[in-house]
Length: 213
Image (cartoon, rainbow, N blue to C red):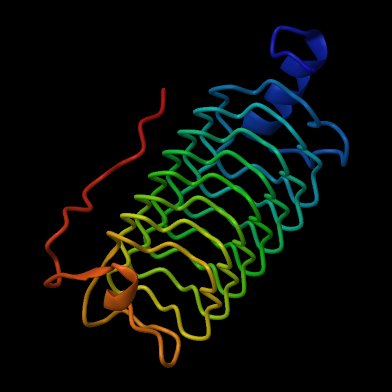
């Protein structure tokens, strides 16, 4: 594993956190230890960060299109406004991560853990979330049209205003999830029958910000 204490890791950190961001090589970040790193607006398109440690990292506005982030640990990281279109996030750890306004169109999030993640207004159109843990996550106004949520756990999730039109919810758990009149569901799907609760609009406080050093 690459450690931030190594010369190579420090060189990487300087490249991606300096005023002039450099393109990251395809294999540079695999297994890297970048816990708490400041990577705002970094160009990580097509980068290979498989199994990297990015706990608490600041990736606000970063570009990670087609990036390999499988098995990465992004717990409590801030990815607000990041572009993860078609990224591979299979089995990634995103517990308590801030993912507001993030682009995850057609991204692979199979088996990922997004416990209590904030996905407010996230674009998850056609994303693969099969078997993902989204329990108590905020999906307020999120675009989930055509997403695959087979076997996903949405227990206690906030689905106010979320668009789940044409979403595959087979075997998904939504007990205790909350939604409102603006939430869109697949044709014929009865959320209350599956344990979800309808609430008045604007009942839940969403004033949460990223906390970065």
